[in-house]
Amino acid sequence: LKDPIRIVITGAAGQIAYSLIHQICSGDVFGQDQPVILHLLDITPMMTVLQGVVMEIEDTSLPLVKGAIPTDDLETAFKNVDVALFVGAMPRKEGMERKDLLSANVKIFKSQGTALDTYANKNVKVLVVGNPANTNCYILAHYAPSIPRENFTCLTRLDHNRAKGQIASRLKVSPDAVKNVIIWGNHSSTQFPDVRSATVTIHGKETPVYEAVKDDNWLKNDFVSTVQKRGAAVIAARKLSSAMSAAKAICDHMRDWWHGTNENEWVSMGIISDGSYDIEKGLVFSYPIEIKNGKLSIVQDLKMDDWSRELIDKTQKELVEEKNDALKATDPE
Ligand code: NAI
Image 1: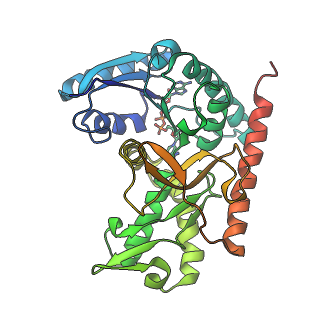
Image 2: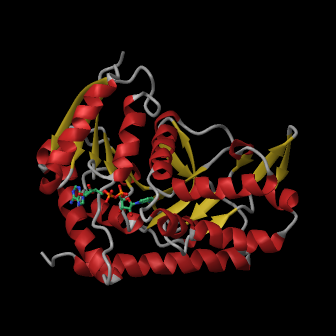
């Protein structure tokens, strides 16, 4: 067995964490030879609940778990961590304006960013899930300047998996037959789920999704809006936001980052833009990503047309506005 890695999960008493912890502890993400020590952060009123989660972790009797530390203290949470999963965030409450939500989250991600910068390992791999995920990631990175920019990501894998799922069910194939869908931009209803480069393998033959579906109107309209609004549809039905599928997407994201993507296959991740595809440099934007030896790179030279450019510009515009509002909400000092 290898030396244990330390993984902090924030929002550890919440519903996503409840689905996530078991998958991490069972070796599904970092490998069957990789022991883990969990740092579980939540706010003070949740400490009793968190104690219960720790009891359950013990009761799973999983051999890869070398420790589970419940805490409401930022130093304890972030000390020497190798992986940081930022799941906790301030939820939108009834009547709350987007700006109020942003400023509440800026406070959280400013203090957690500062703690990450001070206490975490410098090669820590960061994934932000708590919403607004892209902008929370932007603020976190802003306050953790000593950690390399390429170590910051936000979750759009759930949207990516939803897009695969919609195509698979339309074509009545298994989701793993569908390859190279893309989520561009914000994890919000302006995201652009793009299948113009996606393929599907049917009876051993790989075909472009557009050829297989034979319905451009569906692909450009219903498909796009179904994926964009899927999160809201789950909330409407469940009265709670996606948790099982979100936890599964977090695992997919981290597993691919840790072990790499398959040859000629890509995934969607929000990363700090280097300006690729004429996106504002520094913005946390979801791109098609290939991963080799732990290094993320943006798939380049994909074709753009007026339709896709317009959708990408729209989601970019929303992210620029969110970022500017969030920066305004940071303290002047
Ligand atoms: P939840 O409400 O069940 O759990 C959130 C937990 O975070 C709570 O235990 C809360 O006490 C904790 N928390 C709040 N502020 C904190 C702070 N400052 N430090 C540490 N912990 C804190 O919510 P759930 O369902 O687990 O979702 C978590 C977040 O993930 C939400 O913001 C949700 O919108 C987001 N989400 C993002 C998705 C994505 O694809 N990017 C998909 C689904 C959810």
